[in-house]
Length: 131
Image (cartoon, rainbow, N blue to C red):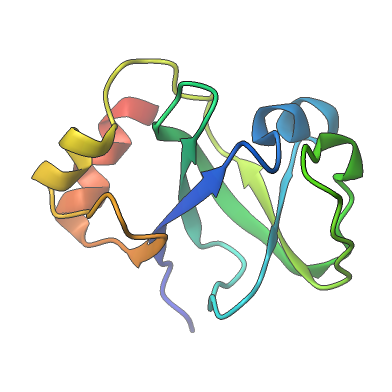
């Protein structure tokens, strides 16, 4: 049995409108690249662009191999992909002022990292904002 991983991902809103994807589809689609995620894993999505620059979503991996369905949400040219992750929000979008670069660096998450597996201390601190 796999243990649930909690990971940090960074999404650039100059390419894709993740908020619109959640509003239209109730999901966010994510290309796999070298990420090893399983159904049930938790993803904290840090959104950069549009003035956010902070973690905005707590998501669960609900599928590990689906075709990308978010063409209407792309700001850059759409890149079709038939083998994506599907993430579903498990909490409302965070709209506070915390969880930005400074707060995350204070708990050991570099502002330059794109993907990171989180430890229990980091999870406990971030989760307080999604209760």
